[in-house]
Length: 447
Image (cartoon, rainbow, N blue to C red; front, side, top):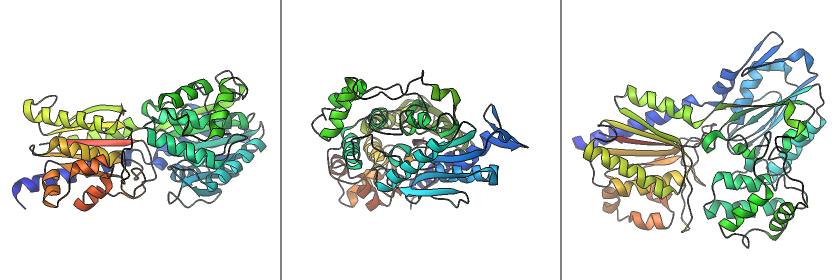
């Protein structure tokens, strides 16, 4: 290995170190304990105080990829004060819990475990009274893990609808609008079911802008979307004839006023509801920035709110890397560009991959042959699309190495097969389940 390759290897290690520091900053259990503590009979949550003596029962519910460590933290804080609880997590995203029933279920495509778990949560909160306290834990993945269909719809209807939405390029905001209006629990309906109990939601954000009504489809917050906006989404992506007829009929009925809307800000349920974000993408980016600076890089955080088609976003990042090399703008090397958010992939092929791997592949094409550039894109939950990889590494040698192995990057990109491209190169980012989820992180290093 020559000197130049040694530099690239060092930069790859730097990128990985930066990513893991970002993940550490949004570890769910630690996030819960930063915002929650008990002093005597008082439970402090954010800026609010709850007198535990006033409550007959304390129930814990939740859904999302990160809710197992969140629940474990609540058990550490409250111990036997927790009466009982139910949380739903993605398969494999587990923790040892004493007083809370943990249910593993399907994500991103819902399954029957998620449906049965949601039914159990709904029953628990409906049985809660005005003198009970319900703590709800919410993180990314909560939408798919709580797939209880609205009356007249089936789980299969929802599964087919989500598959269509995931493959048409719809944003997470748009997907969740449809989810809320085909659900018994989303879009504020969980808060309505829990009323008159006191409800507190601790939320780890996985959506751009940290919009409360979008995270896990907003089960405990007023819903700003409507049946009419759902119809516009279906029309925008030309999928009216691709989704199940029962779902289309339901949304059309809602748009014409024949099905009740999700609760809005005027609903009395929200008088006893408190929603608090305890972790987000920007926190992970700030930790990444601090780590990169400690490694000697000049750092620019572009945004925690990057959206758009993955390949387009990749081209922008690649262009910034080239600009740094050519003109020293916006930073002189050694430079680190950080961004977060969640892009979308419009499927044109039948390969295997995810938005982070596709980002890395598109970036590799843009930086081919340049001087000392490393790009790492990873999902903070440890799973990128339907794969066991969190993302992938790319550098200015990626295309050269691929060519020596007879791999055509353009073919793999066209077929949405970034996983097998990087698998052959040994450049997949494999973190395993991280038990957190605050969208994606992208790291561009230039020396």
